[in-house]
Image (cartoon, rainbow, N blue to C red; front, side):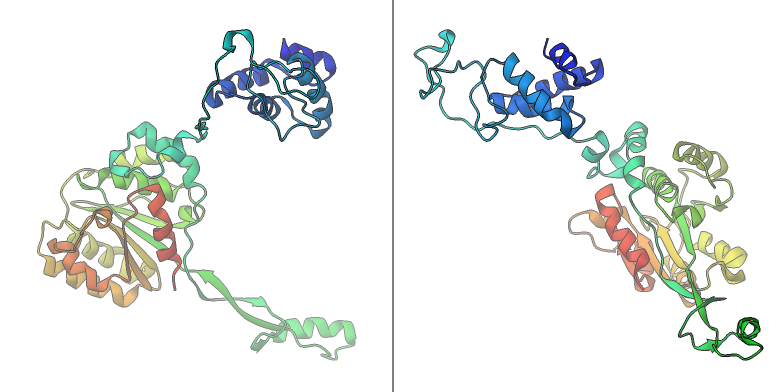
Length: 362
């Protein structure tokens, strides 16, 4: 009835808006006409010009229980009947002789399923719950510090004179270089290289981190490697695909998914095949692992020492760091700690702010 009256008065209320109004009433459970009014206003009105018509229809339907035009700051219990002018409203017949004690109303807060999962540990998420976080992960930006490149850009007060550009501009003035054209080195973001542990203890976190790389701004430019018992490069295979497809390909391409962990061996292979050839030079290295090393921790320290001489910064994301009283006592993590510029947990969506700050730090 209320929706049809609004449509007849010129407010475009369709069945979808009426359904949203009904859902809002169930969630909010309005106990006053003021609360009912705002539920209807938020779900049925789409333009400020519709408000006067809406107010008139609301007042007519609910027979003076609220005066939307002049009494929006006042409210009465739903079901109360207005008394004579100048008198207080009286309770209806079913509530005669009974007064409700003053009580606080708990107003439910509407939040998406992804926002409710933001504080949950990635290791406790199901595949469906992880997929719900994809939209929130797109709000993050994985940026790295900038460095000077060999390319140049025009700059009015640049340190060097662009001779070719100056002579080209001098053609306009008869060959006289009246104005010098200057340039400066063009800044370029440093490479982001990700080494992700996909062993059994890290598989849930690896899936979340791979999803982050292909949802967050800047993550698609990263060089991605996975390791457990061997090193696998995933950069080309995971380029420009949806997160669900990226996760599926990661599990199919990496043959050692959920296997053991040989961090030192994987780092040695990375340095030999990619790092010393330029991929690690000046880059920000992100290692995602809990630090459980099946080999000799001394070998891991040796490889990280070599990596630290080439990389600009080494960030280690270890989900175990979030546990109360955590200490780097495991052999691999204890050996790696001195060579890390930052150690973060990155165990949940709420903890990713620390990760993004560590990557962007100079």
